[in-house]
Length: 206
Image (cartoon, rainbow, N blue to C red; front, top):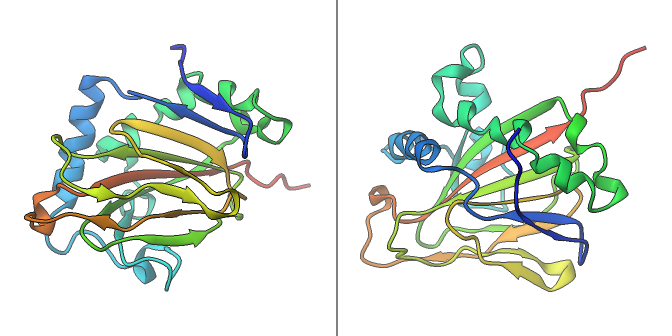
């Protein structure tokens, strides 16, 4: 198991940030799929992908719905197993007792989201999931401004660096600031991408 080097934070809420999470080979596979989705008719509105309707105007895709029977056909669903096979969740689990069961999570969902000019996500929570992991990607040189993940209850925000990941509890309210970009067509793909993982422990039946 590869050791993960990240920065742990206990305040203002438990979270872990890892820079350069994916290697070059993994990034090539991810970008191959992201470019495919950044074509007309591929990404969906919130009402069609399980987003919070009325909170966001960005578009996304639930990969588990698309590749329900054959997950291995998705580069992203294959590569992002790294979240669970590396030591990332073990590191996260040590930040606070509320994170301690993260390594035992055995149910997860993945969405791909793209933000271009004027797109945002208002503050919301994902309390139906124990934990969240957001991986960020953008073409370089970076052409957009904004797109920070922010936490209004804590007066805290983070710049989402390329190929970084943040892991946090699902009860933390979060939003995405409006992305601003000029001289770029939507389908050029110079906006902000996020691969979101939502994960839980399956309910134990007696």
